[in-house]
Image (cartoon, rainbow, N blue to C red; front, top):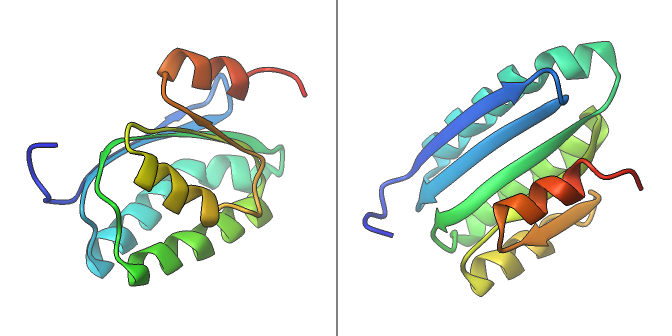
Length: 127
């Protein structure tokens, strides 16, 4: 990772009923709130039609987050499950990030992967 400046990208794949996000850096309260607003906006059509949807996150460039941000992530994961997220795949490169995210995601059907193709294969598989 070249910088600790927080950045994110969020996109919706309507055909697959998926939301993709990519995170990098160390998040502040303001930046995590911006991220959550973007995630909600991308997810809103799926939430409104109550058809369920999947999420994939690319966390290969994110830093281990502060306790405050980690607590916000936990709340977000619980909210995601209530909003209709049926599966979430996380792609990581740091074991510490993976462990932090796993602790925060007990409410979701979560898969953790080091490879993006494996993550998509699991995400789109029938359970």
